[in-house]
Image (tube, rainbow, N blue to C red; front, side, top):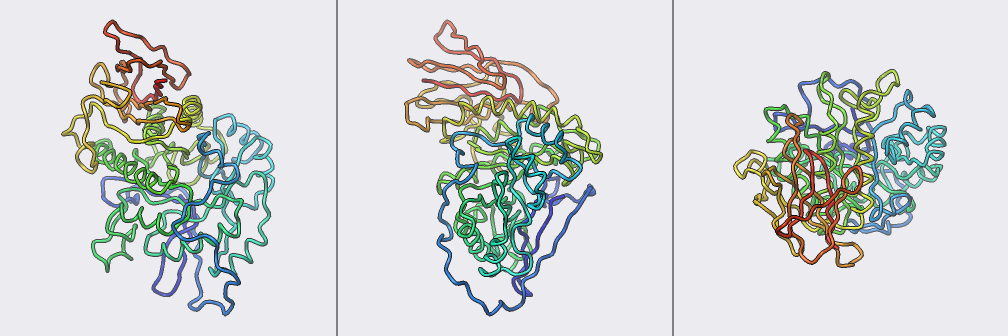
Length: 478
């Protein structure tokens, strides 16, 4: 499972940070998995002294809480290239063959690699990979001076793209954590500082007094995300959500939370000028279940309909749960080829997709009475979509679509639609059909996971493009 680091500010102040963590949805409201054992756990307890050391910070941090930092290092092309990461590469998966396989799978970086694994980092650099590392930050004192002393000893490496700062932190301690985050940004201006947030569905406080007893430390998920933006000067918002931790019977309830999670975080990203990052699952919360290629596709392409700029998969090797990409003996499992297939489909579409930015996301053709649309989602579906450029966009058989409306980042007048064929997210009844639409007086092309897709012009002047369940497609009107 993910590693949790616990900071104790005083005897009454406790919060989880700086780890590589596990959060799931299941039939209960709690996001913690309670029915399945966890295969591995790494736990560190880090404790603040009850009184701070006498030394004071020599200088104040240069960044103010809530301001948005500029992109840096190998993520500074986040508006040009969609990066793909994976959680956890254990020692049994760090041979040169493993790392070559990782690069060939379309992965760009690894999260939670310990910064002391220098031979592994050398191989990462050889194959063009990066790492967001753990082990770089102080473990028993959290003053400015302690961060300064620890980071002065940090030895950089070309393959270190960032520092893992916090995983699923509670908002109760966002003011203190945001200040520390600013210190690290000041002391390590060339490094990306990484935070992953709780998903929608993590427990909320029922009252002000209950904040310490909840996951989020807030009364709502919206308040949690707003507080993060207030106190952390990050350039992106990242959250994890694992839709296939829900049982098949309750999947639509989890799907409703999944969609609403994207809506809430995307709205905050747009408001504050941050990028959207997302952690999905390739592994499974159940030992005899293997996530399918189409289920991986569904997560990736629904994320892209909301404008994600980075996608991260859990897990490459032992981290939490079952059926990782590499097993306990260091051998690739069937999940490797599944992830590889989808990663390269993502990269193929993303070459053009990243030239556009998402302005809003629509749910087209969904049953308005379904649990996926009514349980938690606060956006009503439409029968067909009409925008400034596209008209009457829908499937020819009524299958539901999630569609991201996009405009050119370069303001060249072109528009795009990022579409996920969302009729079969559980992958039990795959089908093929067509997307039909109008785009009068425009030149139209379509791109799927394998490249350009033929666009047919029908007798009435409308267009038709083939698609299959869970596939992603970018339609561009120039």
